[in-house]
Image (cartoon, rainbow, N blue to C red; front, side, top):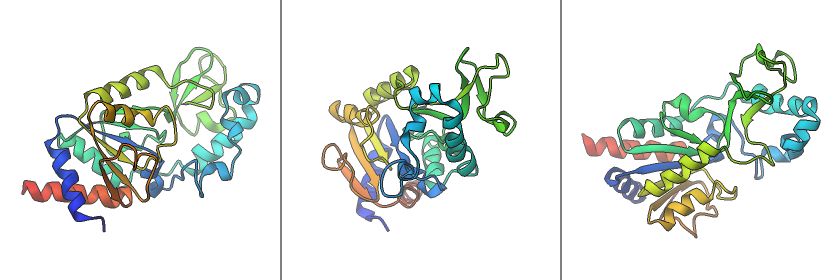
Length: 251
């Protein structure tokens, strides 16, 4: 069980904030069966990252797509939001959380019910045409052929998340840093702080005076640099305890 005094402290800052946001990384989705890319059990220990390099994708779309389909559409298709995702949606619904900025591409925040989600790295549940930029929802029909092709023009479709060598989507970048400017509390969950430029979002918020609450099973790059309150534990456990404490206060 997480440190209850820290849970109470987190609840105090979240409920008294005027603009609290969440910043989430791969750790929040691990309990949904989605492994992180980095670390001991990370995907890059099993797969060569070159398959998600944009230049490799352009020159070897068939080979790239074989690996992409296996990772993102065969393994993870059945993943569902876990209590941490559901808890953040509840915090937004209660009016305490204004937005979620996520490094994840799994769409689980939206599926859990969060309405304001800024996907810093894009979304694996959508495909984009390399020719006319039309977007399509992922479906079994679209993925019957590898690589899938645009129904409109016949060009190859690419997952609508960023590959190595691609820039951060302009709108997500702008919205994320805008939220960092507005906020007074950032709840960092399941992020190691290693991936840039995403990791600069909570750092920027800290520079502007935001209070940083970090929820992670072990210390991250954020912990000793920007974190004000570190709660050690899994995302689902800690978020559930925060929700429980808020509900108890409101009874």
